[in-house]
Amino acid sequence: MDKFRKFVLLTAIVLLTLGVQNTYAQNYYKDDKRTFYGGLVAGGTFAQIDGDSYAGFHKFGLTGGGIVYTEFAPHFAVSVELLYSQRGSKSNKRQLTQSKNAEINNYDIRLDYAEIPVLLNYFDKRKSHFGAGISYSQLVSQKETATTTPSITDTVDFAKYPFRSSDINGIASVNLHLYKGFFLNIRYQYSLLSIRNSYHPEFARSGASRQSNNLWAVRLMYLFN
Image (cartoon, rainbow, N blue to C red):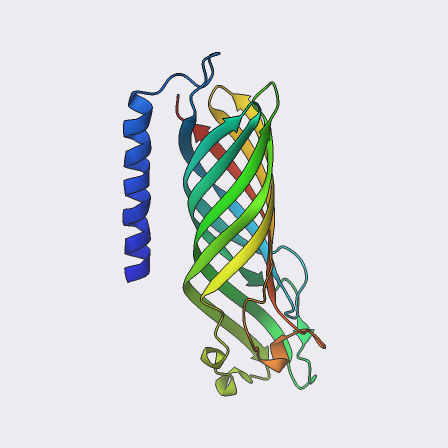
């Protein structure tokens, strides 16, 4: 919870800075564009963890925060974001454990991150833009649960299989200009490193050598005028 409070405080400071900056900034949608401009983003994530027993982007989460763009050449800008992002995995069907001694009724992993993505973006004439880059994420909280028939979860201590405290993702992103300062963002990202060293063999895919965050995000972005 202390990490969450620190993240909220840092986000508030960034947004306050953006507000002060934009009080004196030129209008981005006029011909005399400014070098720095920022805004807010919010939306949902559709995630899975590659290497667990389940496939499919069935884990829904929330994501949101602030974003700043720095234009360094015509049509090109670097963006830096400060986000709170939820990821994980969720079962959508029953299946046997790897030993086939029990049936998994449901399985759920929730991972909450404070995330800083850095992207290189190309802008077209309509202000729609396309970007790619990397992000660093710090794990704020984690929760892993399961129920089985017959019950074997009494003997399962998921705390023995912690996730790494950080995650590094590759990102591809598309921002479609909707109206004035509003954009629809569609983003895909994937872990470049394993997100944990070991995992319970009953709830991992047979032969899996690593586990990775794998997710899509759909967000609405507003850039301040």
